[in-house]
Length: 146
Picture 1: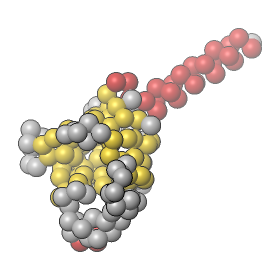
Picture 2 (picture 1 turned 180 degrees about the vertical axis):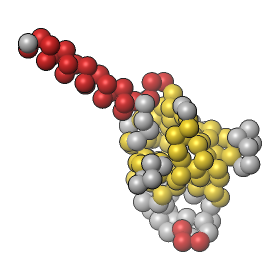
Picture 3 (picture 1 turned 180 degrees about the horizontal axis):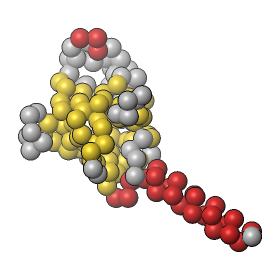
């Protein structure tokens, strides 16, 4: 009987690990697609409607850079607000093996783009694509799970 319980527990833990790797909820290190350097830590969570949201928890700043910059190029309620703590990702809903239909804010230029995301490398990487109009007109960043 204990052998059956042990196998059941192993199966449960295995399915939990697979579910975590198949879900983008968690902490991600963003990597700048131009420089290849880490830019921020973003916490992705599910909102009440089942959509992904992403909030910046930490910025990686170089010596001499403002440690707590504000989004001076943003518009509306985010104008001149601290970038740390800002929600930059919203509205992504699961569609097959991708999360689509959302938006992403680039705090460097204050622009909001359509967004989609897809897990890669067994859930260790998240490919986040921001685009205008169609997905072909955009750029992709690969974020690393922390």
